[in-house]
Image 1 (tube, rainbow, N blue to C red):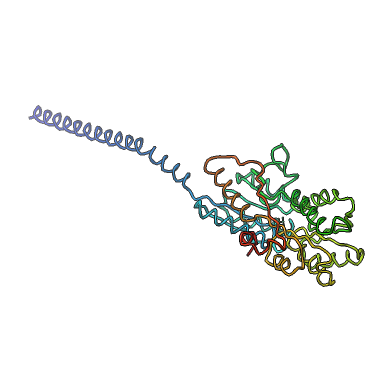
Image 2 (image 1 turned 60 degrees about the horizontal axis):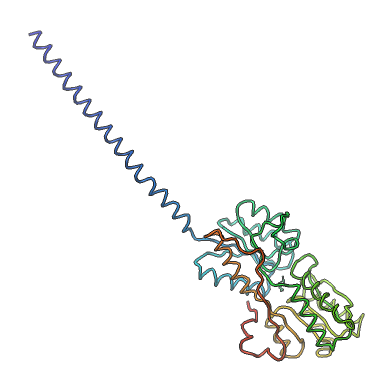
Length: 355
Ligand code: T6T
C-alpha cells in the first residue's frame, strides 16, 4: 500500500515537472517570437520615422521690413513659390515703421509661434539685428536675408554677421549710380541736386545713397547739395524737400531713395509748383509713383523685382533644407527703369508693385 502510494506520488511529480517544462518552453518560444518580431519590425518603424521627417512639410518664416507695397509684393512672390513647392509660409506682423525698434519685437513674436524651419528676413539695420538673428541661427534655424543685409553684406568671410546663408536683393549701389546718370542727363548735366534718404543704418538705402554720389561725381557740373534722412516717413520727406528747396531755390534735380522718400519729395515739388522744372528720380514702382510719372510730376522710376527676390528666397531655402544645397552667398536680381516713354508699354506693367 505504502509502495503504491509512493509510486503514485512519483508519477504525479513527474507529470507536473513535464507540464512545467512544457510551459517554460512555451514561454521561451513566445518570448523569442516576440523578440524576433520586434527586431524585424523595428527597422520599419525607424525607416518610417525617417521618412516622416524627410516628408515633413517645411515651414518658411518671412519677416518683412515695413508695411509698404514693396514687401507686400515680395510676400506674393514668396507665397507663389511656396505653393509651387508645397511648403508653408508664416509671415510676421508688418512693422508700421521702418527700423529695428519695431521689427525686433515683431521678429521675436514670429519666432515664438514655433515650427519655423528657416527664416527669410529683411533686416532693418546692419548692426542692431545681428544679435537677435544670430540667436535664432544658433538655435538651428538658418537665416537668409532678403532686400537688406547685415554688416557689409559679405557673408563669405568670417565675421559676427556672416552666419546667414545668403543675401538676396538688388544691387543698390549699381542702381543708385544709374539713377544719378539718368538724372544728370535729365538736367542737362549741370546744376544742383538733392537726395532724400531714409535710415542711415539700413544697407539698401546706404548703398543707394553711395551709388548716387559715385554716379554724380562723373558729372563735374552737377553738384550734390545735400542728403537728408526722413526715417521712411513721407511727411518728413516732404518737409525736408521743402526746406532744401527753400535753402537752394536753384535745385534742378531730386532723388528719393525709396517709396516714402520719393513720394514725399514728389509731393513737395508739386506743392511748390515746380513739377517738370525740378526733375524727380524715384526708386520703387508703386502705383502712386507710376501715376505721378504719367502725370509728369516725376521723371524716372526704378523698379526692383520684389516678387522675384521673394521667390528666389523660397527656392534657396527649400533646396537647402531638402538637399543641403548651399545657395550662393549673394543672389542679385536686376531692376528696370520706367520713363515717360515706356510707362504705358504692356511688358512694363508686370514691374509695378501692388499690395
Ligand atoms: O525700397 C524698398 C526696399 O528695398 C528698402 O529696403 C526699404 O524701402 C522699400 O521697402 C520701399 O519703401
